[in-house]
Length: 157
Image 1 (tube, rainbow, N blue to C red):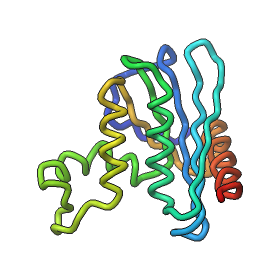
Image 2: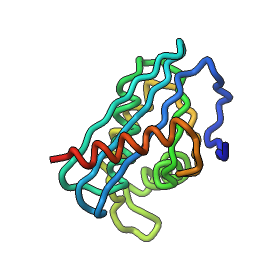
Image 3: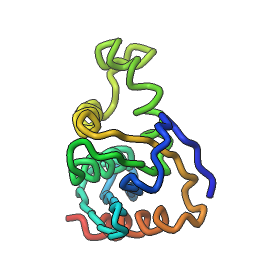
C-alpha cells in the first residue's frame, strides 16, 4: 500500500480508521461523498451523501467532516484520503490561510472556506492522523469509499 503519513502521531490499530472519498461528474456538477469507518472492534460502517450542484473538492471535504462528526470526542482516528487537496490543505496550507485571514498566498479568497472551518471544528475534539493514499491503487477500503461516493453521486438529486 502506497501511503504518505502526514501529521503522524503514531496511531496504530488501536485507533478508528476512516477512508473517505468524493466524486463529482462533471466537475462542477452532481456530486457524492463517502466514508468507510472501521471501528476499534472491527465493525465497519458506511456513510454517504450527495449534492445536486457541487465540486469534487467540496465532496472530499464533506466526506472527512461527516466521518469525523460521526466519531466520539477524544477519539483517536487515522483518516485515509486519496485527495491531495484535502491532505495538503489540512496539514500544510491551513496555517497560512488562517494567518492571512482566509486568503491564499496570492491574496485571493480561500475556496471552500466554509468547509475548511467545519473541518477545523470536527478535528478540534478528536485526535486525527492524516494519511494520503494513492487513488485507484487497490487499497481495499479506499476502493470501497470510491464506489460508494460514485453511487451517492449518481443518486444525488
